[in-house]
Amino acid sequence: MMCDECGRHETKILSMERNIFKKNSDLAEQNRLWFKAHGIRTINMMSSPGSGKTTLLEKTTRAIQPFGKMSILVGDVQTEIDADRLRNAGAKAQQINTWNGCHLDAAMIARQLGNFVTGEEDLLMIENVGNLVCPAAFDLGEQYKVALLSITEGEDKPLKYPALFHQVDLILITKIDLEPFLSWNREKALESLRRINHKAHVIMLSALSGMGMEAWVDWLKEK
Amino acid sequence: MMCDECGRHETKILSMERNIFKKNSDLAEQNRLWFKAHGIRTINMMSSPGSGKTTLLEKTTRAIQPFGKMSILVGDVQTEIDADRLRNAGAKAQQINTWNGCHLDAAMIARQLGNFVTGEEDLLMIENVGNLVCPAAFDLGEQYKVALLSITEGEDKPLKYPALFHQVDLILITKIDLEPFLSWNREKALESLRRINHKAHVIMLSALSGMGMEAWVDWLKEK
Image 1 (cartoon, rainbow over the protein chains, first blue to last red):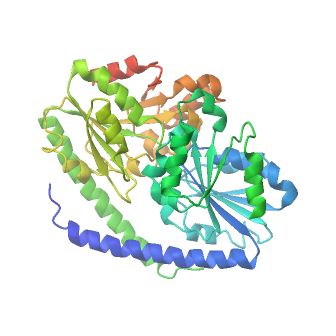
Image 2 (spheres, chains in turn purple, brown):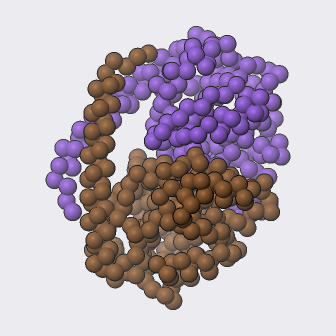
Image 3 (spheres, rainbow over the protein chains, first blue to last red):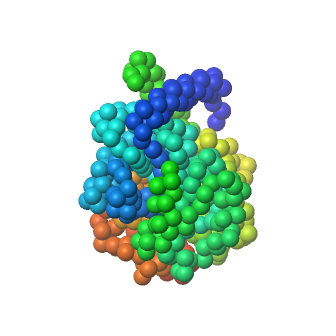
C-alpha cells in the first residue's frame, strides 16, 4: 500500500498550493483597496452548515435598514436557496455557487465588484460556504471576520477547528433560545473559545427570539 | 483583476486532482479487499460538525457490544477530543488528525490496517471530519456510507450538499428529541432528502432519548 511517487507528488502539490494562496492573497488585497476606495465595510461570515447565518442575515436586513445600505453575497456549493430567502426578506442578495468548492475565494468576490456590488453600499456581508475548515484559509479582502457557533453544535468546536475561530474578530453564539432544552454548558463553551481566541468579542444571540440582536446591530454600526 | 495564468494553472490543477482521486480510489479498493478478506463491515459516517456523530457512537458502543466486536477510527482536523470521549464510553477508538485536511482519505485508513484495526473486528466505524463538502469526494474503501443530518440544521441541507447526500446508503436524522422546540418541518426535510436520494433508508433518532436507536442497531446488525 505504499505510494512511491507520493513524496514528489506532495512537493508539487505544496508548491501549487503556495501559488494558489499567494494569488488569492494578492487578489484579496486588491479587493480590500476597492472596498476602502468606496467606503464599504465588508464582513466575512463563517460557520458550520445550519448554524443560522441566513436566518441572522434575514433579520439583520430589517434591523440595519435605517442605518445604511447593505448588500449580501452568499456562497453555497449549489442552489439559489439562500439568496432567494434573503431577497424575500427584502435584502439585495447575490448567490455565488462554488460547485465542488468548499469555500469562497477572493476571485469570486472580485468578479462582483463594480457589478452586483455597485460601490454605493455602506456594508457588504459575505456569507461563506457552511464549513469550518476551508474558508479559514482564504482571505476575501474583508475588514472583519465573524464566526457563528450554534449551541446545538456542542462546546468543543473552537478547539477542533482552531484555524477558523482563532482569526475572527467577533463570535456569535447562536440559537441561544434553545439553551433550556440542551445539555450545552455555557462556561465550557466560553472557555473553549477563550483558549483559541481571547481577543474576539462574543455576543450570544437568537435571531428567532431577538435576544442579542441589538448588541449585534450595535457592533455593525460601530464598524 | 484578471489572472493571466489561470487557464494554464487550472488545467494543471485539474490533472493533479484527477491523479489524487485516482490514487485514492486505487487505495480505497485495496482497503475494501482487506476488509473483505478479514470479514469486517466498514461504515463511513459523514455530517456537519456538531450533528451528533460522536454521541451516537458512544451510545452505539454499548448497544452493539452483545453482537460483535467494533473498532472506531475518528477523523478530526486536530485534537484527541472525540477518541477520548469514545474510549471513556468503552469503545476501542483511534484518532486520526488531518491537520489542514477537511476529510479522511484512503491512505489514512490504510495506515491503520493490521495496526489499530487488527482484523478481528466485525464492524469498523469511521467517523469522518465534520464537513458536508470534502468527505463526499474520497472513497475510503468502506462498504456503506451513512449521513447524519441534525434537525437543528434546517430542512435544506440535502439540496445544498447533494454530492454527499446522494451517495449514502442510510440517512440518520438526529436530535429528533428537539422537534417540539424547533420550527423544523419534517415533511419538507424528507422531501429534500427524497429529491437527492430516493433509495437511502432513513431513520429518525435521538441518541440522547434513545428514540430510533433500536432501528439503527437493527440496521447495523443486518449489515
